[in-house]
Each structure stands twice: as C-alpha cells, then as structure tokens.
Image (cartoon, rainbow, N blue to C red):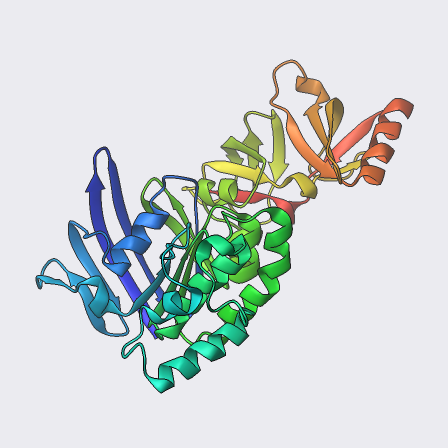
Length: 354
C-alpha cells in the first residue's frame, strides 16, 4: 500500500510544490507553521484542489490534472483528523463514530462501534456529546470515527496540539498502539520533533511549501543532510563554511578550523553541531579542540545551557550553544574557575549540510 504525491498549489504569495512517495509507513511531515503541511493533507483528502499534478493512493488516482480526474472527498476513502477534531457538537459519541460508515444503523456497524468504544477506552461514554468530553476523549472519538470507516490512508494533523502536556503524555502509548495496529500508510503532520521521532518510522523535512529531504526517522535525526533538516530537528549550532582542504573546513561564524572524516562535497555550504555533542575538558585534545570561555549560563528545570566562544576570537565569534545536565554543567563551570577549558568536536559529530 502506498501514496504518491506530486502537486502544485498556489494560494496568494504562497506556493505548495511538494513531491513524495510513502510505502505503507508512518511518515512524519516535520516543518514550522505555515510551511504547507496541513495543506498537503487537505489536497490528499480532496478538501483543497491542487492547481496541477497527481495524487495516487494504492494505484487509484485521486487527482490528476493531466487526466482531468478529481475525486470528491467521499470517494477517496481517506481518513483525515483535523487539529480541532471536527466533531459534530449536536451528535453523541456513537453518532459521531457512525457518521462515516455505510448503513449506519446496521447490526454489524453497531458491533464495530462497540469494538471501537472499547478499543479507545470510551465505553460508557457513547451517549455523551463532545462538550461533555475531555480533550483526550474528544481526540479518541475523532480517531475512532476515522478508523471505523476503514480508510486506505490515515492522516493526522497535529493530533496533540489541543492537549496539555500531562494529558498528552497519558494517552501517547494508547495512541501509538492504534498506529501500530493500522495496516496502511500514515501521514503524521507536526512541528514537534519529539512526536515525530516517537510515532514515525520515516520523516520528510518541509519548509516553504517544499520537501527538502526524506529518509528514515533515525537517519533524519542523526545525520540530516540539509540546513532545513538540521534546524527542524533541533540543531542549535549552524554556521556557513569555507573549504580549506579536502577534509578541512573553516567554520566562519565561530572562527575555528575543523578536520573531517571524509572529503567534503562541493554542495556542502554549512556545518552543524548539536548542543549535546560538544565535549568540554580542562585539556586540549589532538583534533578539533580549541580553548573556549563561558559567556553565559542559562538554567532550565532539568538542564543547563552554556554559551561559549573560542578564546582566540572572543570579540568577533558567534556563541556556541552547549547543553548539559546540571551536574555536568557545574563541573565545567568549576573547571573554568580553576584554569583553561577546551571545547572538542569529534569528527563523527560534525553535520555537513547543503
């Protein structure tokens, strides 16, 4: 089972121009607000009509500008859960779940609904209205309604955005079980790196209406290949580079030179270093070590952020962000009080970005 999307849609000054293919996987669309993630889902569902291109689900054409095909939403058999869940306020839980099913009052459908009420822990709530439910219960009703009609694809648009952090944590495991039991492609839209990492086995990086890279979620988070990918997966230290050797670069904003594991490709324009991948010690190491000074300490509930600069270019260099647990950070601060400290960036932790 697979979904193929290659579409263009212009709205005002914004143009969605996205192309991807997903084979029976849980694909996360990761991007900031307004980048086109939700619009992509709506185009697949038939809520928005692309200007041109093609959408194919399981070898069935949902939209093709060349072939003049544009199936109405009811004929696409897609399941789209909106951010606000879009429950009908004047219908009970049972009626909301039944709304998308054929033969709503059949005995078979009643049995299916009962099964979903139990699966989503909604038993005893069937005759309640959405206003009488918690946010988590509303989410589960919306999911049950989608699943009850056996969609060919499941699309989730920021499913946790309306929930507070405690409630989100309490239902994440149940939500993951639902995704694991669904036998079809899933597209999960979010700007949360934690959600995408937890629920998706592949990830596409989206910005300004385009997909910049797509890979397994593990690869996207450990070795992003683009500037957009590094930013959206939480890399705090990024700067432009100058190539000064086959395996050596100058990180311009930090005014430091770094040795690389492999020869650098011509299309590499930036370097990225994750904040937790910078080693600080009281002595210099053989490669990629430089004396630093701590310019700022920022405390948060469970970690400490140290903003450091290379000592030789202290007046002009951009600060480098380092993240440590509180004990590690306190040890580094003590080290600086006792003498010089050095930052080391190991070769395997250097991200080379297009």
